[in-house]
Image 1 (spheres, rainbow over the protein chains, first blue to last red):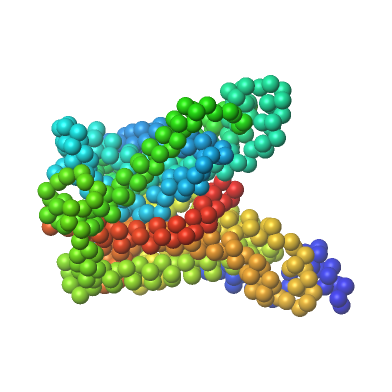
Image 2: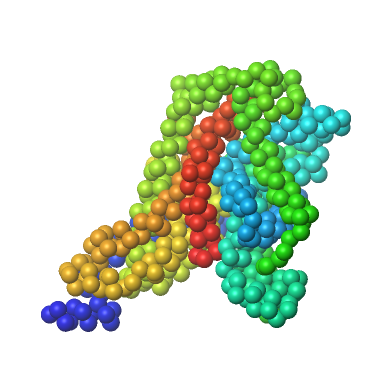
Length: 306
Length: 290
């Protein structure tokens, strides 16, 4: 009796009825949850993307009409452009800053843990709250930034009035909140590189630059690829920060894809068009998917180079 | 990299690090500062970090103040309490669901396991967020879950895939021999989990609990939409953003807005100072290794 039990446990053949029932009950909660709160909503969006429905009356299938309307929506395409400007602009500063600080903090320097904790600290705070705080800092009258400019004898800037300065504020706030997080990822990647490699390279007479190019970069590659992927998608999905900080002003100058969708869903009142909102969502999801695919294709090619 | 640094190089290195530190501290320092200034001092301008007149009135006023125009009885003290309750509920649901399903996928042997696993994988990549927030809201309203329970369930399910993979990775490190000997001693699939695996996975579940608490406490859009029908149930972050958005009156009350923001930030920052290492581990494990 005992022998067969041991054998069954080892080889893992037929699970008994009790085990089956227990397994299904244990995963049931998560499966139902994901089904109801993730899968059904996705199906809902796809279905409503093809219909005309204003919240009352009959649901009428119009298929691609809504999608065609999306392509004529100039505010939406402006928000798409804004989203990419925002993402590229801030990542051009954020990623190098994260890399440089990660390089410095993986060495043996004093107060290393203090600096690491400091840079990572902004990730603890609510993005929505930071939108409120930054709108105080950049306020036109008596905002801290303008007061500091005045203190040094400069002219106060009307930050919220122009598209350029509004976008700049968003980027600064986003970099502030996220560079420490990316730094942490890079640090884990750097720390996983075997120090013996550098020792061997030093013995062989490789210069620091050579070591960086031949050891650090190739070995950091996968981490860099993953971090960049997350950072790009995260920036393209920016929502809360924009809504609580500039709220798309001035004149949709800082409107991004997600805030445009959000406003179509929740701020149009009786003019609400279910089908059109869903179509916007579908087009946005396709854009995000396309960015992911293009990114994965190009990075895989560059990975072959090494 | 082994490099001998000259004194000037070292100077520039520390100069750069301190500059970055100041960049990080700048908004926080001025938030703390404004929360202790009188509204008159803020309105009169000045870039001084230390208040001319130091006051704690802002905190007292915000704490007892109502953030909603529709309901005057619920104060920020209640919103803080609401945030705490919702976050604890979300953590509890997330940890229980994650611990059980990760065990089933890592150790279980049941038909349909692979199909379900790929279903989870797909939801992780498609994600949800703003894309599905409207239908989610419709569904929860329809089945009467537009309350804390619904909010906790939705947040748990949206983040479940990443937590699942994190926990599964951890379970891989627990030797299978333990399960086998438990089975020989007469444990069923479930009691093996309860008595052997669950106690051993407490470290990873603790990390997940901490990250979930942070996410739930800081959450804005979902609580704002899902709790909109009941103004007494709203969370702290939602109430503070409402305070800022309530037109002219809010915009001139920076002292109250900053004191409110401090109420929301302080618990997180204190937690971070105490458990800094755990947060660092939780974040890096979840993304780089997971």
